[in-house]
Image (cartoon, rainbow, N blue to C red; front, top):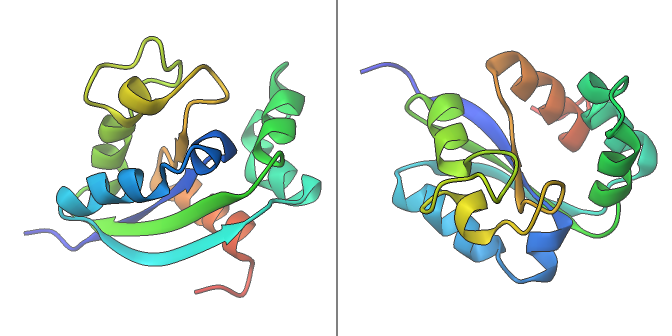
Length: 139
């Protein structure tokens, strides 16, 4: 069996406001993922811009930053087998109305930015997003 892999999820402000943090974490734990780090915060504008820097030149960048800074978020580092790919499958399509039933966005998402959750899409994204969320000195 391969070594566990880590990935990052961020429960977005819409899901935090709706009291869905426990429901979302429960789904990952039920699938066998371990929660290695957990932190609630309200992202600053600079932190959000760094977090979403891959989208900086896209027309929806300002909307993403505005939304993710609109209230508290919960970030979690999950560890488990094939974590990045498996978590992405569990999260579902970005547009919640296109996400399949049974996925987090399909069951709990309300729209495009208010789609309940962010998940790293690669090991490289995980490293960058982990640093943006937890800070440079976080291990």
